[in-house]
Length: 361
Ligand SMILES: Nc1ncnc2c1ncn2[C@@H]1O[C@H](COP(=O)(O)OP(=O)(O)OP(=O)(O)O)[C@@H](O)[C@H]1O
Ligand SMILES: [Mg+2]
Image (cartoon, rainbow, N blue to C red; front, top):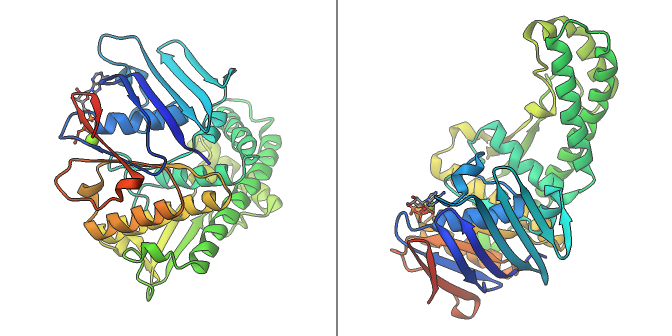
């Protein structure tokens, strides 16, 4: 259960010492273009990940003429502070300094919907993997170690493929095959969970998103060629050994879970045939299913939606808000404010943002 009880964006892009006591349900931040709406959403995301969804460069988020960012919050009764400069990063939860970003994201899981990040349906395999693995990780924290070893192993293999000495390649292939099966299995389990929930609950309050006469399916592309059973270590190992010379030629390993993706189908039609509108709708259904899986597990994420009405019509906005408030999820939404959003005043805080200054309405 993640609820931000207090938030102090001390330094982040154009936000300077902004204090909020957010509603535990809906928080709506209204402002015209260029005032800091996306920056505000990004600051909460940053607090949960120690990185941005918009840029890899810390320089971009440090306020002009300052040398660090700082965000503090009380989340589920515990103080969390993050400060970061070009050379130093300090994260404290409670009284403990932490060095692992995964602990941070366990404390503040966030699901983000933002035009700056893009829609998963019709999106790039990289974006798909990132949302998929977000869910896999929050569903099964153990798997993080596997991902880390996998990435290290892949790096070693690629280094060997580029070098002159291939002696140890087979050992690394064995390790790679083992870790690959673990990751693929974790992803399959997670997708099965999502599919099961989709079948169980017709997501009643999301009815404007899912036409019940149409079937929605997600299929994992494991990153292996069809002939290889992606859950069979020996087959993978054999495949790698048999194709060793072609990997040496290309100097990298182009197969495996790091090349995985998900394919979406609506009534058996592949996502490529769907309209942009349909792709957006299905993306949101997928994201909400991910939220639902976590909520069922009592580790509710905070949901961040940037620029809500530029992306969705009134009926869909209502559906999402209904769905999330029924689950008691904390939401931060930004909007330009030219549409009436029918929000329950008891469950909503409204803020205005102008030039980076946030005021409560
Ligand atoms: N590192 C930074 N330091 C100070 N100001 C910054 C920094 N990075 C961006 N800004 C400022 O933040 C403003 C943009 O903020 P933001 O993207 O949050 O606007 P927005 O309210 O989301 O606008 P839109 O409605 O167009 O999406 C710009 O004016 C930009 O100059
Ligand atoms: Mg914006």
